Amino acid sequence: MAWLAHPVPRLDVPATVDVRSPNALEFVSGMHAVGDTGRRFGFRSIDLDEGSFTAFGPLRRYVVDLPAIGRRPARIDLALVGSDPFAMSDEGVRAWVEEAGGVVAQLFGRFPVDRSTLFVLPAKGREGVVFGKVLALAGASAVIVLGDRTPSAARHDDWVLVHELFHLGFPTFRGEGRWLGEGLATYYEPVLRSRARWTAELDVFTEFARNMPRGLPPRGSAAGLAYRADSGAIYWGGALFALAADVKIRERTGGKRSLDDVMRAVLDRGGDATRVWTVAQVMKLGDEVTGTDVLTELYDRHAARGEAIDLDGLLGALGVEVRPPLPGGTEPEVELLDDRPLSAMRRAIALGAP
Image (cartoon, rainbow, N blue to C red; front, side, top):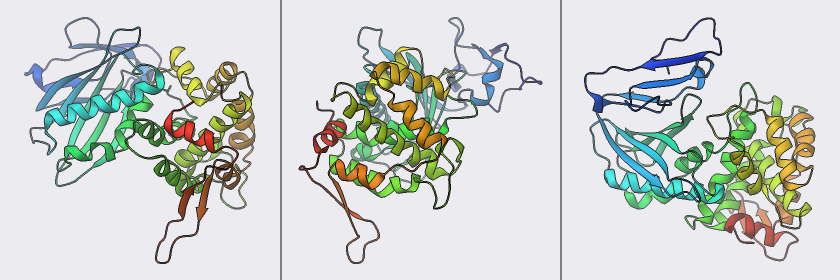
């Protein structure tokens, strides 16, 4: 939103923007449209800090329609920014977005928002996705920077697009909770790709076993997740919290409820990325939906008080055996064992099976 003037002092008042451009085909915005002209947008002035992406200049525009259960189809307005071609072709990019949107919709029962805008920018001479980000308070939008040499066959190898589209289904926080929003996206991205059979169960838990130690509190530290600002806490500490919560909810309810139910409930109550919630609201609703006190208990112990989650014990119970690296290697080796107390739960998480 850097192209817009910010009112000072920053007040929470309605704001309307009218856009006039010489070429109507060279302007796309994720802002909330007002009326049918496509050139008037409305939002709250306080939302400018987390506004919505907008692009000016050469654009190729497409529409991605995603089916919704019991609702009108969700629409992603896809804008390919610039005039240079992608190796996977424009149609390949559109198909990739449609598939990733479908993967996210499987968790929520529908795509999280009825209307969103996705900007795809080329990274010259690169392969894979090199950056992604969501801005949604003035309107649901995301940007993906895609290597222009990325072949269509590699689209299922990417994790960034699913991560960012997941964000659209979870509320935005102000001044708190980044560890929860990023942690959930980091947890669910490999899980959802595994459920879609884009990756394997072993890949999911190898990633967890190798990266979740980064989310544990530093030795001698008593700071909880809610008070840490390091990337390890924000992404992998939050993901470890999500895994521990998912397992504990499944245990307490005999497999009748899971963290999936919490995600769907938050969205059903209006908690998509265009809305501001508090962490306390998420914890309270999650406990109501699951009939447990798992989320508030885990928050109090690990996010507020800074107790370390027993990652080794958790992985061991799930049948995730972590061994020292092989000679010459730097990463621990991981094997899945099916004779451990929670092995069936591990499979249910990764494969979406009962």
